[in-house]
Length: 638
Image (cartoon, rainbow, N blue to C red; front, side, top):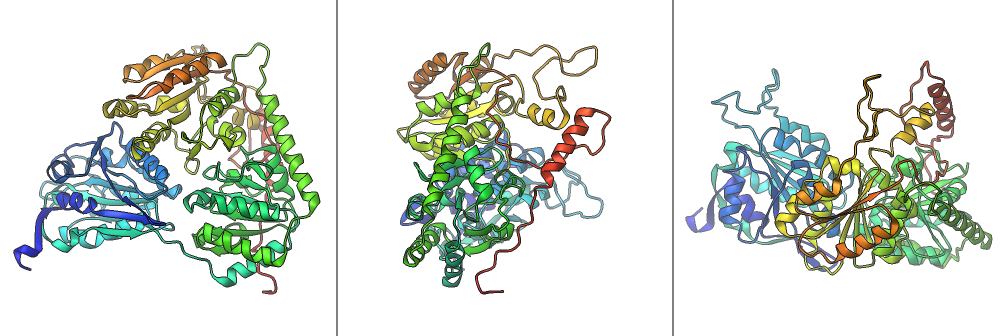
């Protein structure tokens, strides 16, 4: 090559210049695929990627994270806000800096959300072995701590020569924009390789657009699925996150209305279903009682873009109709075949439209009496919620009341971010999506600490948007990962965190008592250690969370009543250039009413405590309801 056809750059510099000209395109909309980088710099990347961003980042903002795991969660929030069209890159130093990102990688991959990670790695030349933070495997000498990323990545590579970037970076972009393969994309960068130079072809830095394609299902699959659905009298739709990612909400609502089929929702699918007579809310362990009643008797389950997680299926015990059959519309063949489903592998929007047309031509409709069952299910759900929202004598405001006040406060221009603890059930079971608030639900990995950084990432992805981003968490999650409030203060970015303060990880003690009887709670409440037993069963520790948040630059309030909460939310709306934190002090032991759904967890098969023996016996009764769902075959295929 002549000197005019190449660009001499280090590995780090080439990465920065390459990322600045990569774009995604979906339904005619074009975005920068990786428009910036989150990072914490140490010896492993401060003179590599840091130098490359500083010298060659002409349109590549840097965001200074406070915790490596949080950086990845911020990128997840960014990806969710852009409907998986964009994400942020993240870099960390070698050793614990990089391995701290593993949990974030697992969260992204489990949720099928794109993130691009550049963990620094040990020096490749080995002249100084063992170097700082090197894991010395006695047999596999090429193993480093970064190999921890392999099982939680959708794409993994380690750069040992600059020329590898010519194939690795395009492969990384492909994985990020593939609806099937997306997740954590990990490219490990040894410290010395980041600064290694190479003559990269100029064509490598030419702008490139990565189209996100809608792949149609095969006509044969669609035809057979129609025949399965036509035989159903009590069908139920399960709407997952794939409905939102495929922008199929309107297609789903039209399909549901045309044939009178009720729609239940997963966590990622919350708010994707229709509003009104056919929307029955969340499904499964944390779902509405009405949705679960319909699911129990459903003879056909039409899953759309979901992983069919155990919380949604009640650990394969929810669907009890002996004749139930499953049809699964999913862009991923892996997911489409779950629970013995008949697979319709393709884009959800295209598949729904094709099924709609063919079912209309066949004259299909659900029986009139089914609409009465749906209305009864919705009524039962409403009555249960009305009970849970009342004022209970001698108690302060409940968690359900906090969620309802927030629900009433938000609107179509706002977004809600959540992902672990008691907030999950509150929103999945009781949130009314008719206000149009967009919901970012992370409950595939249920990662505590995800929410605050994801809320900031959501805000970074929507600069100038008129609405607010709200984060709903418990105090346990706040204590685990609040430090991206500092980054929000640095960046002068506004998002509002509502902390439900019930003095501990209180959503776990009901599980302990359900399996072990009254008093089985252990290690889940924010109490002092007592001298008598050495357990944490003493006085509740009173932490001023609002003062802590204020110390990190946030505007902060504490609310102890519903009226104080409303006032705080109104005042937080006026904050413009920094995070806002509202601490809602609630009744610690008041939760939403249960729906009777089973969830399979590990229980002690032997114990000297009567409560444990009784709880285990009851749990085994639930396991007896678990079913194997035989593969749904197309009519006439057997």
